[in-house]
Picture: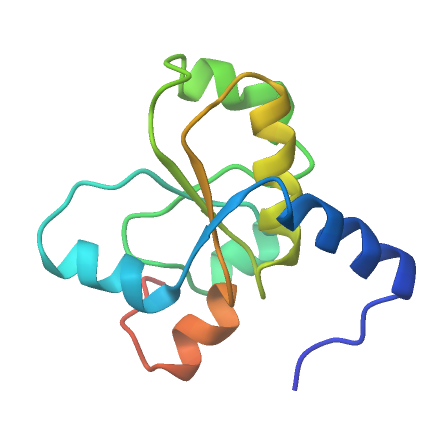
Length: 124
């Protein structure tokens, strides 16, 4: 069962979701299975990333994302797929990156929790 989020946090997430593009874990998995080279960014805490992650994902936690993104991904046209634990923090992060000028940002709805529920492979 997922964490209970506060009403104000959920309102913020729902507002961000009106401005961003979302994808599903199934769509990301299908693209990986097809051999696409995707830039997948895990925006969870470092301790969460250390436990498990989507194969090939890099870590740029939500707390440092805006500080470090330009050094890691200077091209604002690069497709970025963001995920977190359930799709809330990644939605906020996607909205933020769009405000920074990144125009091809996608949030993976369901996040790592749904990835695990589907029993998709993980890196440890």
